[in-house]
Amino acid sequence: MPNILLVEDNEMNRDMLSRRLVRRGFAVSIAVDGAEGVARCEQERPDLVIMDLSLPVMDGWEATRRIKTQPATQHIPVIALTAHAMAGEDERARQAGCDDFETKPVDFPRLLAKVSVLLKLPPPVSPS
Figure 1 (cartoon, helix red, strand yellow):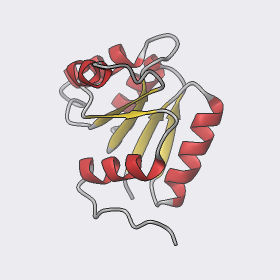
Figure 2 (cartoon, rainbow, N blue to C red):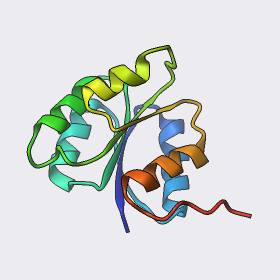
Figure 3 (tube, one colour):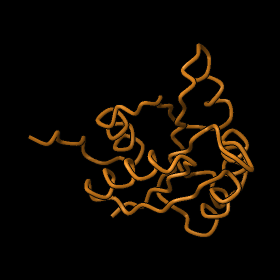
């Protein structure tokens, strides 16, 4: 079962995303700020990180840079998650080291498809 580290400071978003990911067969661990996200990534070595970009303590931009500069974690795919869908934001996220980009409110089927591609899993099947 792939492990996803969800780095999100908003409790409602954390709850919704983590429950939906668990229902889809993923193990989910949580971090509530960027510094905790970097530490958990180093300790747990998740298969993938979903990183909110607007975080307290250390923002998601810096947390991703740190994850991607550490030899032990640089291979871990990171999906940026943001409510700021301004032009160029996805490119800025990629420059920080993110492998993909998703906006809020989250389109869960689209996010799940991105997770599947990055983890090289079969495409997700929509529930009937």
